[in-house]
Image (cartoon, rainbow, N blue to C red; front, side, top):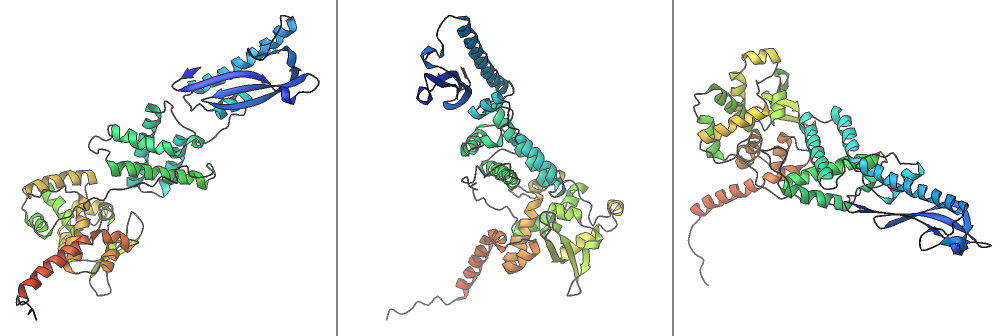
Length: 414
């Protein structure tokens, strides 16, 4: 029997080498996809009366017919178990058929149930922006097992290394669930990275003995960090907008350029986050939404000006926020308009402001990388070092100036 590559074989064998006094034990043999299981029938038969070619009792007596009928019923029962698994669109294996036949069908976690468990458990600890990514990852893996494995779900015990390599290939050939967010290499790796975190939860709870994907190491392609250089930032700051919403979004973007705060951190700010620092000046003191790391940012004049500008804003009075913030999606949509109007040929998003603070505003003006790391709320300075290439450009500029002032007299050959 074959279906979508699956094969089933059901038969009986007599093991004469285990027999005594002319009788030998009878076994049920089940074969699924080339893998075999043999179950003792707990009985011995007259080996001389067994037709090894046909796998039945030989003869025409009523007793022989009765015994052969019982064997045929067992064959039918095993075949029914196979079809039950098929109807439930589960992965068909020798263990699955054998356990269902024996009535000891193992209740185990499946991949989708594991995702459901993870997402429910993490509601209390992960912010929505992160949690929704796990829901998206679950959708992609669900689409994969349905379209490529022809099942609705897959038991954790059936997950193998090839499951991920197959998923990677599937994603490269598939359309994105989110139309404006194509599945490039790094996006695919992020989905796999999230799956590995979910699988680790199963290992911790002892639903899996070990991580079946331990040998799979997601590889990310390095990409250029988008930020505004000094001249681009000046164009954004000095641009006069006739549309109020664009002027307002520009102000919030510039505020982030001079504080290094992400969208979610700016959104969470209230007046209580403005405190006097050790120098007697105003500082922003808050905890990052992403990692709960405390950040203490001295207010630069341009950031303080924007706070003062919106101090009497009606929305602030209602919400208690420091600044009236749109949704991140709307902010990014308006920033595209701002980039066009400022003739900036870059994909401008709110997070570009944080990169601009790290590069153009701080590192490029000589602020030590250790200080920048603290201002950004990074737990490790290695995270901040991705901006180090800006230091190289600064070094290049400084060396050009040095070449201009150094004497051009050549050394004597002697």
